[in-house]
Amino acid sequence: MTAALSPELLARFAAITGAKGVIHEGADQEPYLHEWRDLWHGKTPMVLRPTTTEQVSRIMALAYETATPVVPQSGNTGLVGGQIPDPSGTQLLLSLDRMTRVIAVDPVDYAITVEAGVPLAAVQAAADAEDRLFPLSLASEGSCRIGGNLSTNAGGLNVLAYGNARDLCLGLEVVLPDGRVLNLLRSLRKDNTGYDLKNLFIGAEGTLGIITAAVLKLFPKPRRRETAFIAVPTPQAAVLLLALLKAHANQSVVAFEIIPEIGITFVTRHMGVTSPLPSSPWYVLTEFADAPPDALTAALEEAMTQDLISDAAIAQNEAQRAAFWALREKMSDSQKFEGGSIKHDVSVPVSRIPHFISEAMAGVEAFMPGCRFLCFGHIGDGNLHFNVSQPVGMDKAHYLSRWHEMSSIVHDVVLKHGGSISAEHGIGRLKRDDMRHIKSVVELEMLRAVKKMLDPKNIMNPGKVLPD
Image 1 (cartoon, one colour):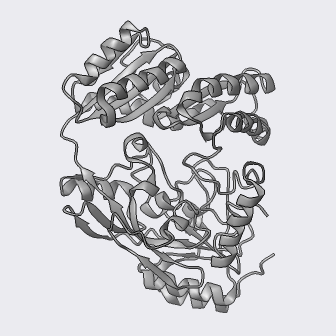
Image 2 (cartoon, helix red, strand yellow):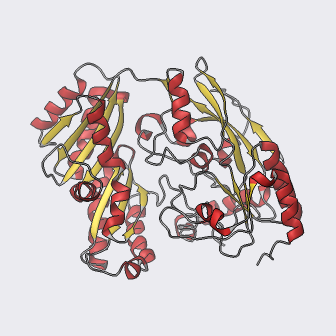
Image 3 (cartoon, helix red, strand yellow):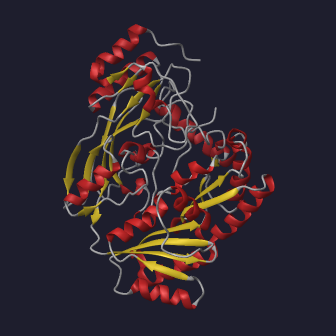
C-alpha cells in the first residue's frame, strides 16, 4: 500500500500550481471526490488544478520521481468510478477544470483545437459561432469536458451518423506518466506513418497519460432538422423501422433512440414533461439532418402500412423538438425517484437487440421478480442502457447489494450475442474485475504490456480498467 504523502512533498506539488491551484480542505474538495451515482467516495490530500500543460508536465515529473499516484479528472461526470481516487488518501487528484481555452477554430480545415478542460457545450458553441457543427452530444454536455470525453471514448446521441469521440479526434497533446509531453496536435485527415499513437490514450481512462489538448473534427452545420417521436409495438419493429428510415434518408438519419413505456412514465411523473403520444409499449425518437424533401413523412407512411408504427408526432418548431428530446435526456435523472437502479451500458449488433432485450429481461426477472426494466438508448448504433429499477417496496441498499449478481446475468446475455459490456461509459472501477472474463489471455497480456511500458511505476490512475 502506498505510504501517506509527506507535508514536504505536498508542498513541492503545491508550488507548481501556486496557491490558487490547490484545494486542501475536505469541504472544498468534496465536489471532486464523489460521482453522480454516489457509488464511490474517495479521499485525497490535495486537489491540484493546473492551468497549463507545462504545469501538468511538472506535476507528473515530480509524481514519477517520487512514485506518487495521480488520478486525473475532467468534468467528474463519469459513470464507472474512473475519475475518483481510492479511500486511502494517498492519491493526488489532478483536475483539468481550469484548462479551458479554445485555442483555435479553423472553419476551412473543419477543425477546432481546445484544451482538455473545455466543457463539451462550449466546444459546440465555438463551432456554431463559425457556422460549423461539433456533433458529440451527451445529456451531461453542459458539465462534461473534452478531456473526459476522449479518455472514455464517449458516445452519445449522434454516433449513428458521426461516430464516437475517437472518430471525432484528429490529434492530441498528452502528458506521459514521467512528465514528457507527447505533442500530436495535428489536423491532418491522413497520416499513414506508423502506429496511431493518439488512439492509445482515447478510451484509456487516464491510465496511460493525461490528455491536455485535442484537435477535433467539425462538420457542416445542418440547415434543416426534422425530429419525430414515434410509437412502435416492439423492439423488433424499431429495428426494422431503422432500416426503413435509412433506406429513405441514408446518412441523414443522425439519431435513433429507443424508449420503453415505463421510461415515459418515470419522466412524466417526476421531471415535469409530457408525452406527445398516447400510451405505447415502446417509442422511438429519431432525427434527420438535411434529409431529402418529404423523406421522413414518406418513410413514416410506409412504416405505418407495414405495421411497424402505430402513431407519430413530428416536431413543428424548435420548442417542440426540445420537448421531444427532454423526454429522452431526463430519463437517467427520473430513475433516482424510483429507488435503486442497477445500470448496464452495453452494445450488441443492431439485429440482435430484440433477442438481447427479451433474454436479459427474462434472466433478471427469474433472478429477482418484480424488477422494473428501463431499457433505452442508442439503438441506431446498438448501444443500450439496460437499467433495472428495484421492485416497489424493496430496501434500496439490499437491492443495490445484488448489483454484481444481476450484472453477471445481463453480461452473459450480452456476450452470447457478440456484444460488449461497456459501449460508451468505460470500465473504471465498476467493471474492472469483469475484464478477466471478457478479454482473452492474449488481449489482457497486450493491455498490461502497454500499461507497463508507458507507466512502469503504476502511478497513472492506478486500480482502474485493468484487473490485478
